[in-house]
Image (cartoon, rainbow, N blue to C red; front, top):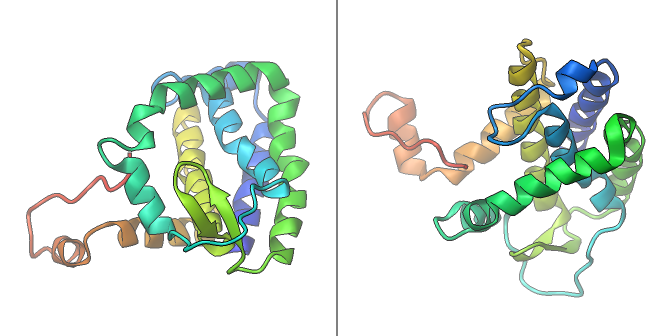
Length: 200
């Protein structure tokens, strides 16, 4: 999982290093976000793993339950969407294009090295959710990094050149979010009911 995250963050760095000013400013399919805002939104994760909010104890919440809570009608994905979008836009303007690339080219490798030193079952605080494990935190960060990299490629009109391992792990987590019976029924053509999207 950490190897997949390392690969996808390297891809962010590679893409960012070659962008023109016009490409940085290209609108994305995420309303209100251009490519720079996408970089800013995901770019907070490499730095966050270097200075995480540690937890002394408590019952950890899984990645699946965190994402279900976030995406519930009253969850953060809905109630704080505007604030999250505004923060990404403001941060992109504050750090500039080199700073956006540095999130992944500089902080990214340091964050990956830190993750390799942390026990998978070690605890940290996850915003608006409580305590989770590092293993589950990595699942969420990988999903965010992968989904928004696809947003970047879509905005730029490029092929979705995303590391295969990142796509595979993201697909697994999205499948875990769905009701298992409904997912199997739909995936095998035995149901015409739509169970998508499972994530906002």
